[in-house]
Image (cartoon, rainbow, N blue to C red; front, top):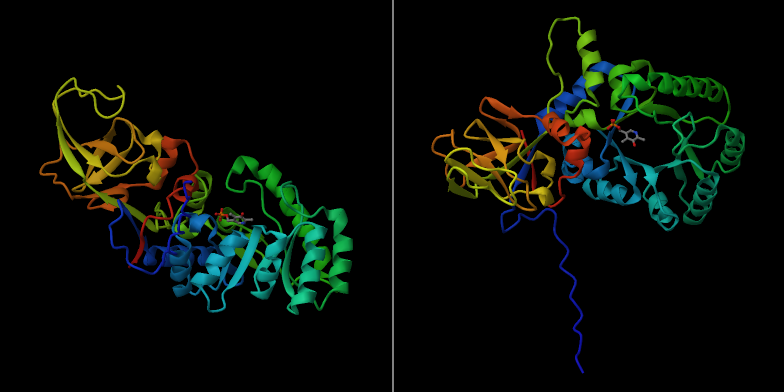
Length: 405
Ligand SMILES: *Cc1c(COP(=O)(O)O)cnc(C)c1O
């Protein structure tokens, strides 16, 4: 009889170890760009609100460990995530007492871990509240909660008619629950066309804030601001800003950037945010292609003349969108080279016929600056009909990420 050998599990990867075999691409993260972005947001919102860096989705693709390390150097001591799993990653990256807040999914079986580690979390239903008090009673450590209230987003959010019961429960369980915050999230503050909807949410939150502030059982802080709110509705900053996309140097939307330009009175029509991320690879192979030959899979690109093609070791499995087929550009020797043919799983091809002296091993910039040219993240969102966060979020966690000056 055949014996089935158990498959040994792989040795756990040491995230600090230098990879011995080189990856097909690399990400460079600019410490000074993040510092610049945080300082710009600080200027916008003034000294009062605390900034919590949102590092969900692997820090918008930048890498949780790296983003946390960079932000710590800029004085950020609070981080927001979408799941308990991500909270664990933040704690591993910042074991030195930074605050961590889970805005989304937490499984009941993880509550003991969350509470023991002082991880703060959103509460948007009464069963979570009761469970939190019960676990806190067992572990002997209070649960730090933020009650997310319904203001009209209609995703998560505690219905307002349940609030009196919730406040009563919190009061009765003072020893087990730290009532840290009351918060909400706006449904599309980055789009001005949504303002009729979001301003209704703002009104409701404001009324709740005024009412709660006068009560004995009240939270330590109130918060509702994401990047778009911080940059365009400063009156709504309250006590904490959950800052995501802008910290990484991306505008929440063209609307918010245009608003900024309109409000800028010093005449400088510049982008005050700086992209943190640069993505690089190298030329893998060069190919002479004769007129009328097709390039890559299928017939989507036929050479109109004799040309030189550079083959790059990157494809959609590496996060390079397939929508860039026959449209995107990369930088080689400081010049733009257009994608020709389809973006494959691990490879795509660019036209380097007009760039002299291209060699195998030459640096290729997929996103970022090379000499006087730049490939913006926005060009990706435009070609791929995606949000600019969508593309960065999908950059695989396995790409090495290095913090640079
Ligand atoms: C993602 C998220 C944010 C951050 O949004 P940005 O637009 O990236 O600043 C803030 N609050 C909540 C609840 C979120 O889910």
